[in-house]
Amino acid sequence: MSDATQGASEKEGRLEPRHGWRDMPLGGVIPKAGSATEYETGDWRSIRPLHSKERCINCLLCWVYCPDAAIRLQDGKVEGIDYEHCKGCGICAKECPQKVHAIEMVPEGRIKEMEAGDRDVR
Image (cartoon, rainbow, N blue to C red; front, side):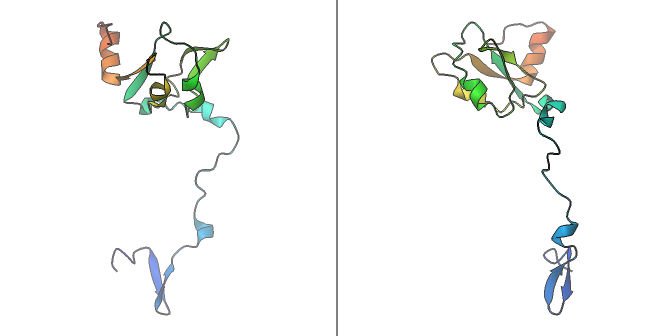
């Protein structure tokens, strides 16, 4: 049996699937709303957004565009980033106004160097 017909069986001169669509497991099912907060996904990240409170003008574009709701707000201002849920996509840094540049994407390896003693990221 060739790769093209593997997973199917021949019946009356035509290919028939071995399993019907009803036998397929459901995919992408979210059993209850708001369950994403229960799963920490930040360890997928290879680059991390660093937020500068000094430069931030609190336009909230990073918060609006963050697909993981990882931008933390307090009293209508950006407080920081929830690294347990941030996947490092960089959308927040891209949406931050160019003149402000309050969010910089930094490789995780560089963060580890900072934590080990070298505090100068930039």
